[in-house]
Image 1 (tube, rainbow, N blue to C red):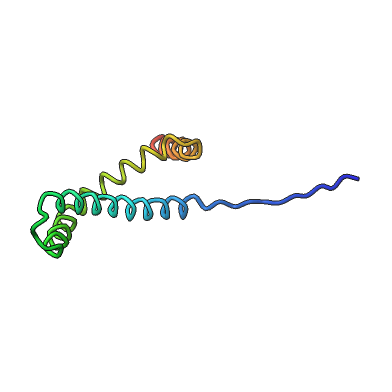
Image 2 (spheres, rainbow, N blue to C red):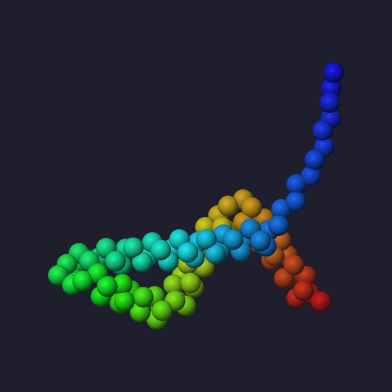
Length: 102
């Protein structure tokens, strides 16, 4: 006896990309924060922790745009290497060419 089952899957690429970007930004920022904390703590073991936290907060506030830009480039590079990322990029480039032709 054979059974045929049909189903559809809907994928929201825009939402997936937004979630990946948001999570990547948080993860990269947290990793940078922890690495800076570790390096500073090793270098200045005599100073209290709150000094480093305030300095790191200041650093991240001052460098926020650069960190996000670097993280975005890193994420775009990683996504462009995946099969789905290449498909999205090809689709985007073809739509850009169509807009330029008109």
